[in-house]
Structure formats: structure tokens, C-alpha cells
Image (cartoon, rainbow, N blue to C red; front, side):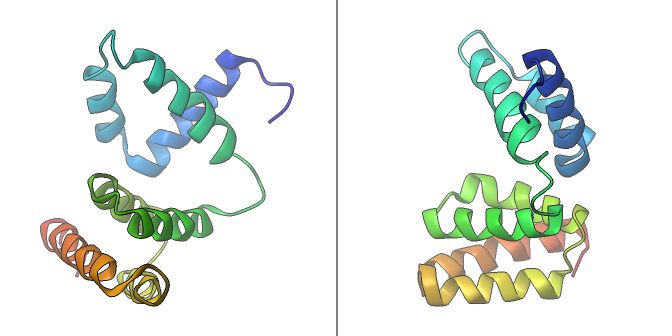
Amino acid sequence: MAGLTDDERRAQGFAVRREVLSDAHVDRAIAATTDLNADFQDFITRVAWGEVWSRPGLDRRSRSIAVLSSLIAHGHHEELAMHLRAALRNGLTVDEIREVILQSAVYSGVPAANTAFRIAGEVFFADGAS
């Protein structure tokens, strides 16, 4: 995203972040911003959302698959539920997400996939997606 100013990346990042994670999620993150984490919130909005998620090389479905796989592999359970919801918004089906988690069992381990299935069940049951 060469040539964009920080303000343009920030605006683009907020737009993409809202589309992928929802207005409610982003509004909660903004409301929870403190002096301690303000620079970090700005960083993820500009870089993760305004640069990486905004690149044309992968569609959002593919990016969601990559994110789910990474979160499962690294045990980032606190982010997994949020990105399971995002994956649905990005067009993945529950069946496709099931396959991503099953695939992760082979490469990231059965315990990681077991936890991911538990979290997915909680998300999908609470959201009514399954």
C-alpha cells in the first residue's frame, strides 16, 4: 500500500476492520483504548488492517483461513472466537471452518484442534450458526 499516508492507512484500516470484525467489535476496542494501548491500537489499525488485510493478493476468505490456521497453531485462543465470527462474515461456511480446524489437527496437533473445535462450538452455538 505504498504511497498512502498514515491517515489514509488508518481510515482504510478502520473500514476493513469494521467490515471483517463488525462495528460493535471495533466500537468496543475504541472505547477500551487507554494511554497504555493507544499506540498499539493505532498500529494494528494502520498495519494489520490498513496494509495487510487491504492488499489485493488474497481475498478475505483466504485471509480468514490463514488467520484461523495461525491462531490455532499458536494457541491464540483469545483471538480465535473473534476470527471465527469474522470468517463467517468473510463468506466461509461452518463446514469449511470445520475442515480448516480438522486440517490443523494434522499440522498443529490434536490438542490445538480439540480446543479450536470447543471454541468454535461455543461461538457457533451462541451465534446460532450451527
